[in-house]
Image (cartoon, rainbow, N blue to C red; front, side, top):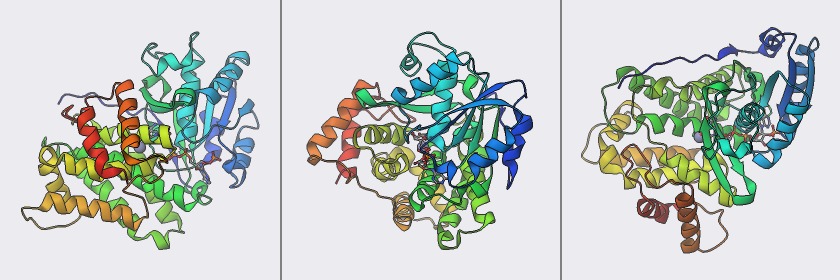
Amino acid sequence: MKFSYVNPTLIHFGQGQIEAIATSIPQDQKVLVIYGGGSIKHNGVYDQVVAALSNHTWLEFSGVEPNPTVETLDKAVTIAKEENVDYILAVGGGSVIDGSKYVAAATKYDGNGWDILIGKHTVTEAVPLGAILTLPATGSESNSGAVITQKSTQTKLPFMASAVQPKFAVLDPDSMKTLPERQLINGIVDAWVHTCEQYLTMPTGAMIQDGYAETLLRNLLTLGAQYDDRDNNEWRSNLMWTANQALNGLIGTGVPHDWATHMIGHELTALYNVDHARSLSIVQPSLLRNQIEAKRAKLEQMGKNVFGLVYTDDLAERTIIEIENFYHSLNSPTELTEHGNDKASTIDAIIKQLEAHGMVALGEHQAITPDVSRKILEDAVK
Ligand code: NZQ
Ligand code: ZN
């Protein structure tokens, strides 16, 4: 397929790079620093930000929650408008960066910010944004996407706009040292599924996109295998860079995308508060089995080039088992157990939300209708 490609985010990678924000943000800009629940106060990141901004005028907004809500973020929008903020600096994981993207866009819009998520307002301008990443997973630090939740309606929706793509991103592997094990594993799984969403579709002969996607997948397998020896800069650096490359646009240029696992997963998160990455490892194996004929050729290619399997008639089936084994090796679940009610009403609730959000023709062939999602969930909900 035809494509035009640019990734305009300047990356400052490596230990000690947080000080680069001193020159990346013009000194005459008034900065709003946005962060989450306070993890950055325990790993030295906040102190480094304060030191780097010593010649800037700045203020802060904290309390952005995992799976950031519009209810919280609108408070930051009010501050950004009242204080005439020129620049936003997001410091945290995907939630803080996504939330900051929403704040950046909503600050330049006079209507209700939620209009951005429901497609009623097309974002063409935003407050410029930079990011300091503390959790490698989403790729949000150098892409134009964000996923925002409306708590009152349990709705989690994505938006994309080039205006909210960070101008720069700092990737300092030292900032990962305080990550709880669960979040670290979430990062590996999310990056893995991002790669799959852009690779496990149908063959197109795109040698760069396929070959690079396979490299990223093999990296994640290796990092998972080395998990017990992860306390070193090399391991952290490789994960941080791999997760970034998995969703910075490159492997997705000019090839079909899937994203059905993500869209169904978002509903699990919105309804049952499942961690984003865990929602993906729950849905994906079942989805791949359901779509196995459409995806057979790519599953076989993955089996051979990522897992090193030899060809047999059931190579695609064995590849899905390997993917599942990978999740199990990381203790990431492949069945939804976090729901409260019985299985039938859980599935009904998820389908109802998918329909309400227009998620009725998902996947690279738009073949995943609510009926198909229901079949996928039959296997995914315990
Ligand atoms: O809030 P704080 O105190 O910072 O704690 C966070 C949070 O509790 C903690 N954490 C982050 N860095 C830490 C740390 N704790 C200790 N040390 C550190 N260095 O980790 C917890 C989870 O953080 P969160 O930002 O929610 O995780 P993640 O980066 O996995 O982001 C998930 C969100 O990103 C969206 C997801 O839907 C979800 O809302 N996604 C965004 C995408 C994008 N923009 O392209 C694509 C993804 O598919 C995904 O949908
Ligand atoms: Zn994801």
